[in-house]
Length: 531
Image (cartoon, rainbow, N blue to C red; front, side, top):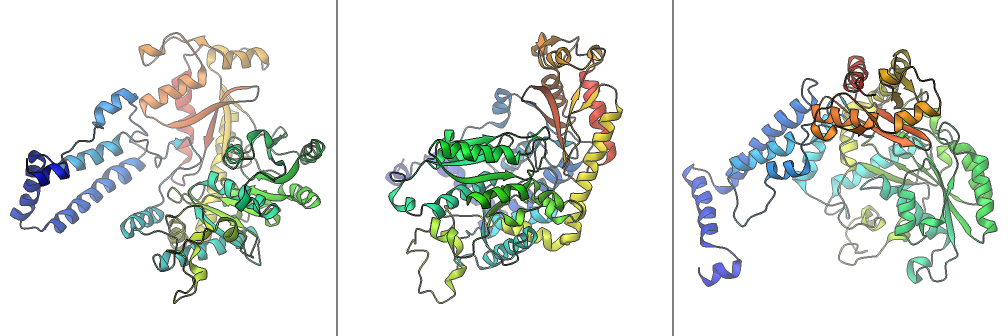
């Protein structure tokens, strides 16, 4: 081994493999650049065949379940000194797709995102090919203007006629954290420089159905999770305004300073919408920042039939909205919007990095939006929403929302018709929650005994693997069986004193009534032997 090879950490074998790869390109009459281009073309064919066509074909499996140890073996995860041939890398691409969950499949109902949006997906490809970052206009001129245009349109839908400010960021949790940080900065701007030492005990309020990111924000930003007051909800999962008022009074009596109320438009489990208008009245009375987490439910603003669910959202100080959920933009696509137009977002997060945000540039530096963000590098996610919106128009986006909610109501009606299925509550949005009761339990009347049997363990006659034998639960067993057969994917959970129930989320416009009928039939087929 030569000294140069030793310094580069390369073995002669590695050099020979790399040289062989280069020589192969030359003998094929191709420079190395054309070889790379050929690989990209071949990889795109794999993506179209495996991740687009097959992944959206209802006749294909939603997933090919493997245990972690089995999957480690199949994927050959070890990273080595030498590289592999393009043909082997293409096979690894196929394997990565094959063993991934097909979230675009018509029978995937497990999360608050689903389906394949072709225009948004193409935008994602372009973003990766262009490979830029949204901090200054000079390095991302196209995407800077597109983000501004999308944010303005979203503000218009919210009802902020005079505009506002905003930014796209990696996920709704981050948007909620932005809201907390901005609210604190508005009340106590010195905290940015001097820290928490002289700050009062600031507290926030969220419903018992609110997203856990509010508690995470409290922990990350130094509030402390015990300074998040949890407000009770009614039996449909909506925050009770009177209970909010009581919690605010309680906090004050304990010497705390109320700061922010987080209202939810579309809760994760039930799809419930807090009464934003009534909550806004309370926030105005007590001079509190009102943030609306509309990550899931914001899409209803596009529907003339359903926008009433967010009545009063125009009174919010800030809004989180994820187009990658109901509207199906490619992950991630999350907007944080703030009603302030006086640069609060910029002042709160600005670090004035002189190598990026020079004030003597030859163009209007107000288009250098990166200092509003807590990130430096930031993907142009708004392009994924912009291109899709351009292609479909607001009318088609509205139709998608309306269809999803109509299909959810169809499913709820079918649940009520079928023996052995119990609807938890009528859906307000696209979340449909229900129990499946196996035949062996159907003679037990509604009440504590039935709920105990649904939730506690009991024996069944057969299972798909030896590990399933013994004492098991209904929903977890049905979920295990559907995953191992690959027939579909839906979620389950407990809630309060309620035993495990299934939560179906209907989003994908490719979903048909036949698909929803299949789900109920399949749950019965997978669980009818449980007792």
